[in-house]
Length: 300
Image 1: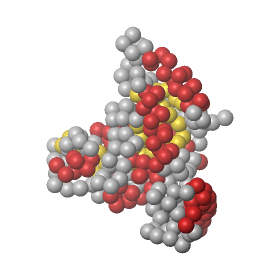
Image 2: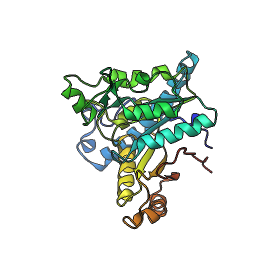
Image 3: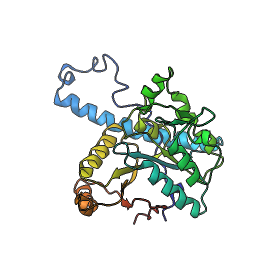
Image 4: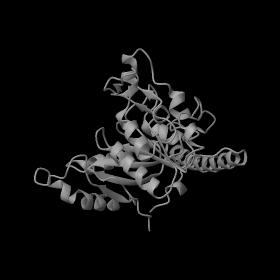
């Protein structure tokens, strides 16, 4: 089985795309370099590449200093999906069970959940968080698995607004801290799809980048999945190229029914061809409905 704890990605981007350019940036250049001349475009491309190399080096230095100061960077995966209801929780729980069976201490974290129900004590309970907690062997507390829970079956910021509040963006990150001391690896499950909003300003991709986590992509094995996977991959590459992607899991949220959806027989093989054709060297897994454990084979 793959050593999940050994995987990590660079730190979050220090400069987001589009930031850093100041008004009048080109003001000192000769006239032929202004506006959109080819010379300016070439200069800007070279400057961007040099800046990127510098930031990666600086980022590694920050990591080294963090370790020297006694801070531990969390190893783990951010499980995201091509859509809602593709089986992220089932996949995350199956990964957790397999890791627990392999004697790993597994942390499970769902930063925010909506569509929760009230228990007899009047507390909002997330069924997804409960499933993850049970799969990992009940580490810490259920509230630490999912610190922010809202009732309305809407995107989290909208569900929070229904209750007259807002998603706490600081807590999205800080909620991971309790898992550092008790986990060899943490599995973080997002909400909805990769670009679905978690708060007023953050989506799942933003949080995965900020938490230094590698993406695992869950997609439902049904007609249309090839477009959905490729669209997500290209979006992630364009918006956060520094965030690594560990693989794609074709999940069966319902039992196979190849008579109603014959694409289920061929989606995995056809998607593998498309990924290879477009230069994506990503492991492709498949998980059946009701599968209890999911092992990720090491890459060759």
